Amino acid sequence: MYKGAIIKETLSDELLLDYLTIDKVDIWKTDDIKIKYWTMIFFHSEIDDLPQRLANSIIENYYADMKRKNTKYIIFKNKVLSYEIGNISEKEKVLNYCRSVGIAEKQLAYPHELPTAAEIIKIICCYIVYRNVPFLHM
Image 1 (tube, rainbow, N blue to C red):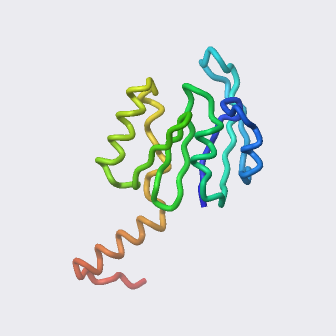
Image 2: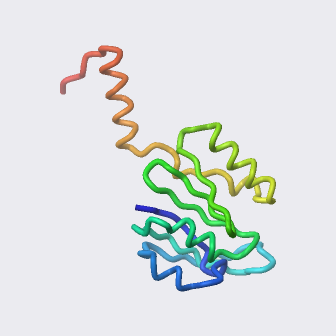
Image 3: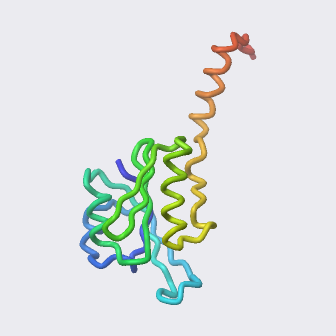
């Protein structure tokens, strides 16, 4: 399942929305000179070719991002970039492309790539087992 966000006003074909299950909608006031207010759509979708469909529908000079399992997708007009979350070299290649087309540095930080509580617990448990640390009993 893909999870992501798109600015509605950046779609040349709003029929793309038919392929999304909309989780949340926000209106954001922006400094963008072309689009003063953004309708941010947070979504999920099971459509396998969603990144390519979005690449065909998004307008020039904008991008969308989404995640599927452990892969992050950055979608531009007619271009789909991706990297495995945690793979620093793949991510840096994608970020370098984003910088080269003028994406602001502040837009390149993806806080949702931080581990979830469940992932942190798994890491701690693996460390405990690996280091043979005795469990605390309460």
